[in-house]
Image (cartoon, rainbow over all chains, first blue to last red; front, side, top):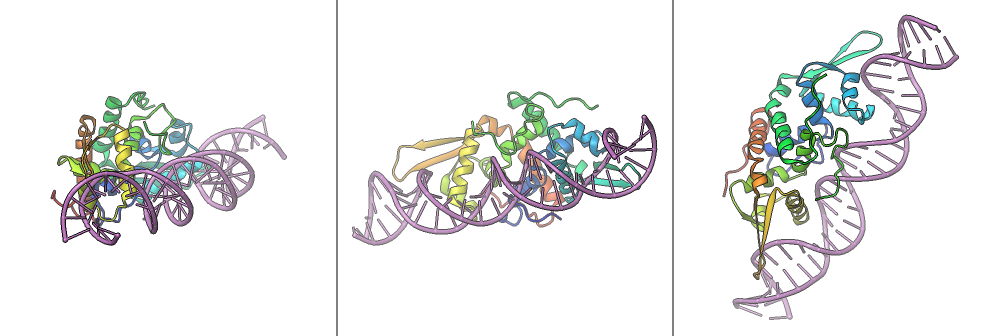
Length: 119
Length: 119
DNA sequence: GCCTATAGTATCGAAAAGGATACCGTCATG
DNA sequence: CATGACGGTATCCTTTTCGATACTATAGGC
């Protein structure tokens, strides 16, 4: 489990709203989870979908999502390296929330074009 | 509108998922929005519900929520000062999401007791 | 040798988010 | 005068998040 985050509430021992947000509020995480909803993806495939994210940031966020049990990372003993990411059951249970966030953003925010369709 | 946040995505012009998260992911915001779902509240009433938050942080988050159009702040010309906060229509449209976040947290996170009932 | 593929890691720094503490203003009351 | 109610503001600091850049390892092709 990741170290306590700046945003982790210490008020009422884990307010569920804040606690849930703490799992998905890192930059790029929402999009990562959204992409993985369509199925397993490899590192570079995810990255190609988000050209502006640096390798470092993508790796970091993926590792955090994994540590929080939202995604599964499978490393294949191959060369070149082959690593696949997919939503865990726990991560899948977040789908309604991700979709609701997306719908709300599209309906309420200007300059919020739909996320590009799955490749 | 608040200055661009660290978390505001600049990848695909405003990915809706991330953009929506950017509005609610500040510390305490989720709880503030949850409390206001029950109706209008004054500054100190909110604060009493979250003893660990400093005045400064509470003010700051409330101001951001207001700037993003999620809550309404009404100042009454009285002494002692009287300021009331309530959800805007836009903020109200986020209720399903807030409730879903809470439900998910309660169902999936250990040490996630329900938020105390409304006063 | 160089380059490509793949998925990183290491290091350092910039920017943002959050917090601690003291102080402020108006009015009323003892 | 002091204290309390109320809702802040000012200032400075700490911590966290995010980003930039260079480098790594294995294998294969030119």
